[in-house]
Length: 296
Image: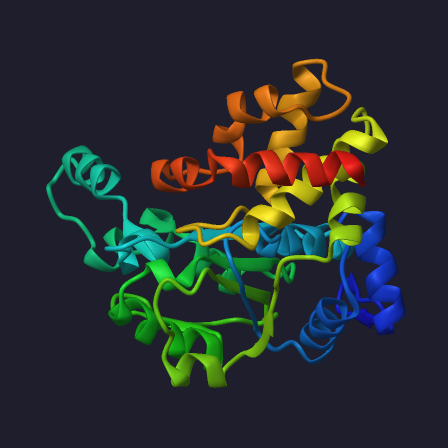
């Protein structure tokens, strides 16, 4: 179906096929959530553990729509100046100094040519219906989360010197959260919601094979099996699909076609990122997981 200058998949099946064509392997639940979000133009909140493909889903949607991706990476202390807009003070000062008579029109000084558009304002101002990715919203402060309520409700922002800027063409919005803190109900009510969990072993093998085609089939399956086993251990930070892909790439770089315990121990830093987790599995647990993976 056509929405303005964007073509949106007309069904869940078409959405799944379009995602697959971009290299993103989705299950039906995620394909459904993305299809509904794009069709009714409602923001979609994707939650899940780090590395399960939330950000990549937004990138895939941008490729499907052939739309620009505008990304706002959230972090503690994120404010309006970095998320919405700020004034180009250096250029304003140069403009004042260049005025021969020193008489500067304040309205001109705080006009559009001195305005620096940050991701939120850029997305709202764009006539091209971009994909707006608000990444890791759980890392931002609660005050910024509250500010987003106006943006997600009315797709507008207020600039005191210029007035309210309202989107003429609403962007497609995807938010992601690693759930490092609970988001407020007010934000969730403005979004559709979907939880992305770790994939099944079969789907993870397919994902790894797609991203690392040079890996031997047995190596991709063994790596995915070991990672799946690690997720069942009591770890501070279970590895995601991204770590499985990174690890497989590292194993390929070392010329390995199958796993062995020495190589696994040497490359464990590609999978586990906390010293406590590495120490916790560097015993019989790791040896057993490797043996099970090799046995198929």
